[in-house]
Amino acid sequence: MFVVYYDTMSLFACSIRSQFQRCSRSSQLLLRRSYAVQAPGAPTLEVFNSHMKYLQKERAASNPESSRQADYLKDEIALRLVDRLLDISRDFPKVLDLGANSCNIARALARPPLLAPEIPEEVQAPKKPLPERIHELVCAETSPTMLHRDDGLEEPVVPIKQTILPSLETLPYEPGTFDAVLSSMALHWVNDLPSLLASINSVLKPDAPFIAAMFGGDTLYELRASLQLADLERRGGVAPHISPLADVRDMGGLLGKAGFKLLTVDVDDIIVEYPDTFALMQDVQAMGEGNAILKSAGGPLPRDVLLANEAIYRELHCKEGEKDRIPATFRIIYMIGWKEAPTQRKPLQRGTGQVNIKDVLGGGAFGQ
Image 1 (cartoon, rainbow, N blue to C red):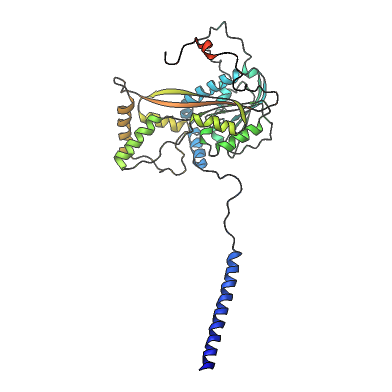
Image 2 (image 1 turned 180 degrees about the vertical axis):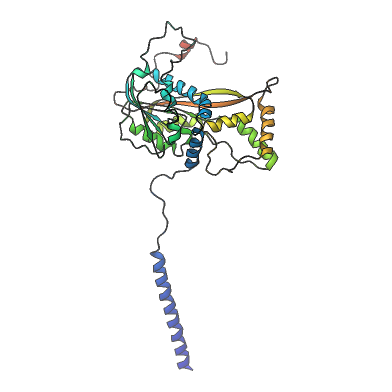
């Protein structure tokens, strides 16, 4: 009995030893196993479908007549952006137009500058026209059809160089290349806006300006609200039909983090009247500004949702006696930032002011 018991324990011990060795080998294999790791750098959150936006611009520009008729908003914003550049009294040998669309900024340079009605014309100091101060305008765009849409029309007054970029988020230019960077109606489709702003700061020469205009804030808030209510009523849920937009309070912080100095950010609301919501959405598509959210519902809206949206829009946002037309608000964020330079003017420290603001405003307490 003793011998049998000893053999049984030996067999048991051998079995345990062999299992332990197998476990050790498997554990060694597990330790050598490779795991997925995150790439270095900050993760990029993709909100917009860049390929879908490319197709939308190509489709819009493939019908030149319809696309030109819907360019009223882009042309007006480009003119207001160029007016801000006119206030800078210097020459710009080489300027980048980032997200040029159909070279709207190049066309705006040929138009007469805006006049301030509150300042008498004889008091305004004469300014050298911008076409005489810009020697080369590099128009960079991702959509070839959109960029070359107006090649058959009259050439711009400023020498331009049209360039196709695979993406607006990666700039293929050396640091210190441009004397100014302009961007009109393009930055609101960028996924990694902080990284792009840092790249723009890099390609600028010292003490060079960056001036941009983009949709933001409450753009088309009327259509956004009515579509949500129509979706909720007809389909029992809400889907995103209008892309999210940056707020004006965010842009100053983003410009500062990208290294820009002497920041200026302001907002302009442009209200356009349309006969109905169908004309509004048709013009938005002709601009190439349709919804491009990465995880949108996709597909056309059902007829019953569109009809419900039309009725809700008129009921909520049209005044009495003006039901024959609808207002649509486009909020434009304008921003100006300067690349830092040793000779650049610096803001004074707090508490060093010599003039009391009460003396400038006429005195008195707040609320009077």
